[in-house]
Image (tube, rainbow, N blue to C red; front, side):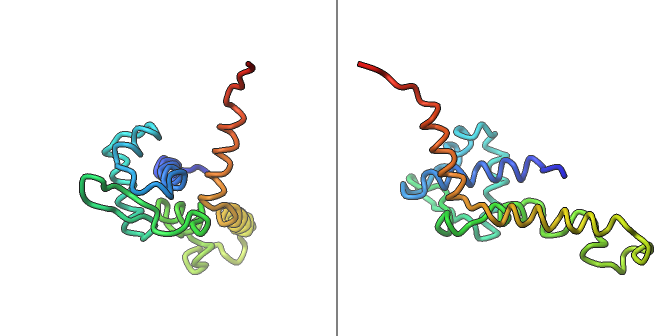
Length: 147
């Protein structure tokens, strides 16, 4: 199962908003700079996320983007489905009639189980979880100074 750059970078952009959730809007330029994305690509990602209702845009000199909900209520699955769509990896899982081999296919169950397991993992992780993990790693990586 491969993840597209849309999903990976969209999740990173959402993480950036979660990390600064209580600080007001982040500009597109700031999101792009912090996550090492081009502004054009970040803009396309944020547009999709805004249309899906996961982020809000704020106009003006102090404008930018905000999460539309608390980061503890937004799952990675939601971001994934905005970027990739809700469809399973093979059409026959959602619509058996599309497969002429449905009755004898032994791989369909494997793909269905794989999809369910992946969605369960993505559903179990929120943006708040990612932000907490990020902060813990940053703290662990920070040098300590002795006086």
